[in-house]
Amino acid sequence: MNNPLIKTLVSLRGNPRACVYTEPLWGLSMNLCLPYASVYMLAVGLNDVEVGFIASVYMLSQVIFAFLSGAITDKLGRRKTTAIFDFLAWSVPCLIWIRAENFWFFLVAALFNGIMKVTTNSWDCLMVEDAEKSQITRIYSLVIVSAQLSALFAPISSILVSRFTLVPAIRILYANAFVVMTIKLIILFICSKETGTGMIRIRETRGKSIFSLLGGYGGVLRIMGKSKGTIFALIITALVGAVGMINITFWQVIVSKKLLVPDSLLPFFPMLRSIIALVFFFTVIPHLTKVSLRTPLLLGFASYMAGQTILINTPVEGSLKYGILCLSLVFDGFGAGILAMLAESLVALHVNVAERARVMAIQHMIIMFSTSPFGWIGGILSGISRNLPFILNIFLLLVGMITTLIYYRYKRSEKHEII
Image (cartoon, rainbow, N blue to C red):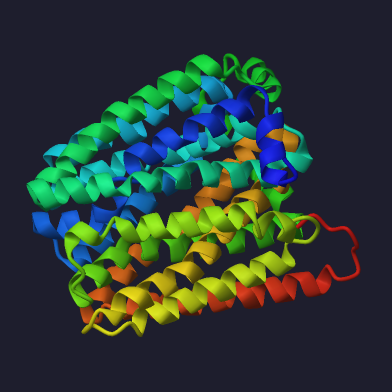
């Protein structure tokens, strides 16, 4: 009970508890599919450039819906928005992926999947608006831990692929994802309630159209522009998002197509990464994030860089490559885990409370717009060499380290800083 995360988990009440406790269902649905997502596209007939283009379309769709998300969330409320748009963003694409036969199926699914930016906003508001500010970083840690737990079920994917071959197995997993995601959104809707800020915003926006609410974004931009912390959070989150998108999209491609790892083994590597991340979240990370986030940010960037460097230098021949891949995942597990948590926390910590939905909408839109070209760029690079997307990642992570050092150099005079 001395562990800060366990103490936070026990103390959670209301919406934060409902959000954290239902998060494993997302993992039990989508995390079983993600290790095969890009390989599945290649198996259906897409090439590397088309896979990267789909990733960029997905990000551009997120840009559009991130822009709309603040107004929608204020108009409908956090709880109702999350229920409606979770179905559109996850359940509907799963139905399309089940029947996907060519590039156009994946394109349409990516457009629908981009709607998830609406629920990213509404779900974040639902989770943290009634929570204590001092708990926010740990709440996001628990969310990531909850999602990572699902990786323990990765052998299910491997068994299905071994028995039915790749394409039929992934169709079964997407069918499972449709059922589980739909159950998740129903449970969350039943177990949650509208936040205090959400009820105020519903009353304030009653009788106003979505488009009139969008007109208020000019003032929101001025609020954000005055905060150096907000600008720093945007840069870090955009960099982490770009690296994560490239890694998720092309990791299984390099492992399957360059290193020639059998498809049936692919899920075990994300499982290992998740187990490593869980160990770090319950041991090292809570102690690193007690005061300043400078040190954990720098460690996260450095660790992620080490993992990517080891990956591109993994030999193709011999069984030694499996050990080296596992070593790369040790660094990836720590780096990706802590950076994902810190990026979300930085955004939430610098939000104007009264305008949380619209500020986060603009933040997510800027982040997605900045990130969206990297899927297409990664696809072009992967078509030239499977290593190049990860060399790009190393460069982006280096930029993140430099940005962090510059920002905290100007924060050095402030003691007990929270970011």
